[in-house]
Length: 185
Image (cartoon, rainbow, N blue to C red):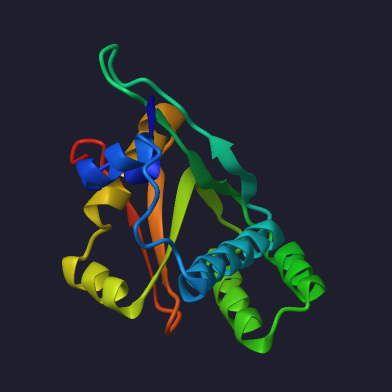
């Protein structure tokens, strides 16, 4: 009797079958499950960087709503709420404590260099780890995928703060981030 925010914009028939508890005809295999694991690893990595920089406010915040009285409820958990002042010196110390691999230290240092001593607006950050194929599409479009935009919009509207959809390519570590415009959603 509800829809997940991540299902908004996806095929209605798939959602209907899921709501009726129809078993999958092609359940995830071990390779598919490892792809999900890869996404969890990226989410954990981003969380550690947000913590080290001192800007993680919350993670996995439940945001549920009933858009209209005659519609299904929408349930979801946004990945992160982040924002605040970045103390560059403290962030550098925290990154060192994490004992990250060299390549992540370099990324962290670049983020701290670019954003240190700045106060970031508090936002909802919805992270998507995607394949090369999907990342190429995102880069061609120059914006978040429509279903991710709708998911972010649900969080933005009902969480009462701006939302961004961020992408990390699992294959080559490319990144992209898009703010959501309330007027366009």
